[in-house]
Amino acid sequence: IAHTNTRPGVSLVLKKRKGADAITLVDNARAVLEATPPPPGVTWSIVNDSSFYTRSRLGVIATNGILGMTLVAIVLFIFMRAQAALWVLAGIPIVFMGSLAVFGNTGMSLNIMSLTGFVIVLGMVVDDAVVVAERIVAKRDSGLLPHHAAIAGASEMLRPVFAAAITTILAFVPLLALGGMPGKIVWQIPAVV
Image (cartoon, rainbow, N blue to C red; front, side, top):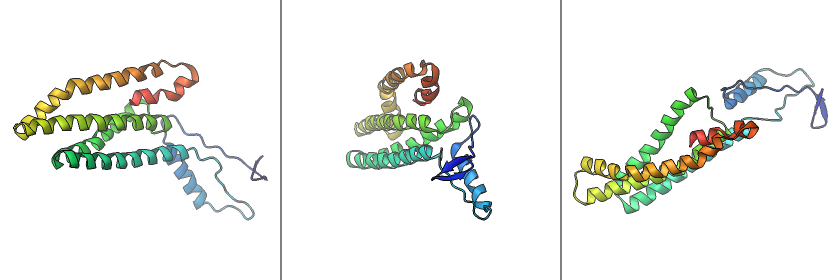
């Protein structure tokens, strides 16, 4: 017997399977509760929603993504050609959709830790896209045809962008070596990065 809001009751704890989606689990549990009317004098209440933090992180990702893309678009439209801004903006969601497609094969799921890694990577992706786009616009301004400017600009920025990505990866690799409970908790952050 448990107590909720000083009233006696029964506590039912739902645990998700490894790799299961917490949001789907909670949504399904809510649907069952809403579809099953309690007997007279009995009430249902959810006192600990494990999907709250995941939903919150998804909201942060969406808000940061929209805000970041808006700010990048404004800056790119002010300082560069509209076409470069559109290519940068189109590339950001494509990168993240590709990453999510790999998730299922790596044992990762969308949770607080993996979403924290996505927040970190969001800034890196935008920075790298802006740097490459700027170089392509500079090549275009020097007189190259669009497809030649894209190849030349991306080729020139390959090493600096690759070096920046490697230094970031190396900064997060030690987190993969954490043992015990801390390692089990945070391993997805460096894996995503």
